[in-house]
Length: 535
Image (cartoon, rainbow, N blue to C red):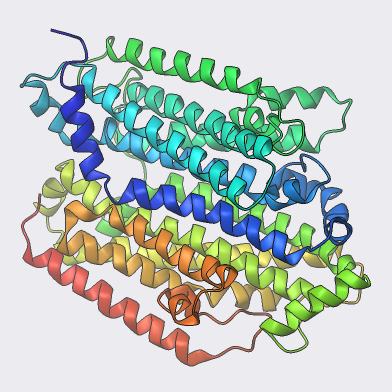
């Protein structure tokens, strides 16, 4: 009997379980790539106009830290400037989700032990998970590259774009596979894999912002994100980092199998932390907060950094707004979104909406933890005490609502501070106005959180669809206008009803209606959870 006997059936099972999540994520990333490129090409009809916009931005260290350097001073390079790195990070997150879901999550829930009693060898689950994640990464990269070539971008650069994503995505397939062997919990796997992603992004950011002759440039070669960036699509089109990415992928996956053979089923290579918990855990709410504490700290740091970066970028956009031909075009774009709106206002309105989609992921992750605790059979032990299902569910809902609102407010606050500290032009940036602009997105975020709560209560096996809904909301809200599709499609997303402050004036009615919808949907989810069986 082979060491990977049972891989085929497990791969089919994993594909069936992810039949919505993986295709929706792949198509979403392809649409993100193609839509962003098309919007850039349509916005800048000439290279001179594009250079007038990008030249000041590319000298800003905050822009380099967030997006990396431009691969060349061409329209093709500018068309994928944002998507090379940010899309690569999203692809890494997809790889992480797939591998963790079909390895450590299944093992923690006890289902792998049950499968092991049949004709399934020890290496089969990991092999199936790595295979599915690898196929998802390759499909996303190939289809994205093909979509760029279909838009008329240089064919060799489009291939290099796909290679860049392959390097990043496959690296995180291997990193997550190793993380799943090191720890015995899904939260531990998330901490290691996502922590590594944060470190890789930081190393790349430091390397990109360093001087060309600085030793810090070497940090780019310590980050898989830096490897993907060094492919330089539509620039040097250097395919050599592909071999580095493939080598890292092979070594990491091999290390994951080696570590798997040296631990017990259900355990991790690293020992669990022993001892009693410190502090007060006298209520369900305090326990919920304790379990989410690390996540909340990470999002708080991210909000501070991202807000300051956006504020710094806005100071360069302010100078662009006063330019001649490009300024006329951009002011026309601003007038299309609101009366007498400056380009800085348009920038903040757009970017804060993007931040809101990301923060919605925080709320969804907190609420879907209800299902994680349930399948791990820890919920039964908790509910055997004086805790009720309603209090248990409401503790997660309340934390999701409060934390997402606080993170958005913090991002708006730091963006305002960053913009006012670097402001040199005539455009006035109000810190309070940016906090308000960030907070008006909260009701739409609450709707996304409520959808996750409804799935947990009504169809717990389909909890992963909450992420698919968020991707659909993103596509409807951001790509429908770019592709010229009917406006009613944008209104299908709760984010499409949020006023774009500080460009538009504040309208309270849509926010009230979104809050009511979120409350009704979340209540239905809590009631359904009370009425169904646990587990």
